[in-house]
Image (cartoon, rainbow, N blue to C red):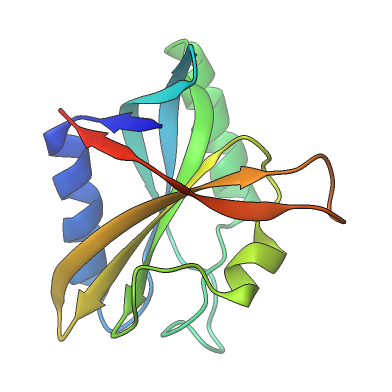
Length: 143
């Protein structure tokens, strides 16, 4: 389960609207508590994809290292990632699965239709390695 405060939830959705018609991307930081990932902050990242930014994203590894370091200074871990799907459903694609590598993390997707955030879903990356990984529907509790 992913537990996220309303302000963080809305910030993710706004980010998708602001970058439309391109995909936005970012990082979820917080802590694991029992079986739930608790979001305590989010960090925007630039989409470095220049060839297909309307339907692909890539977080610059330097951004990811910086975000992880800043999170650790606040006693936060990376617990997930988010991105938007402009004019496409809030459902993971085969590319999303192929490019997901952080097992046990949440992957949040917001569909943005004609510039307006419509639906936000979350998926947990499960499995033990690349050969058996899968994205599973994950309940989201907005608090």
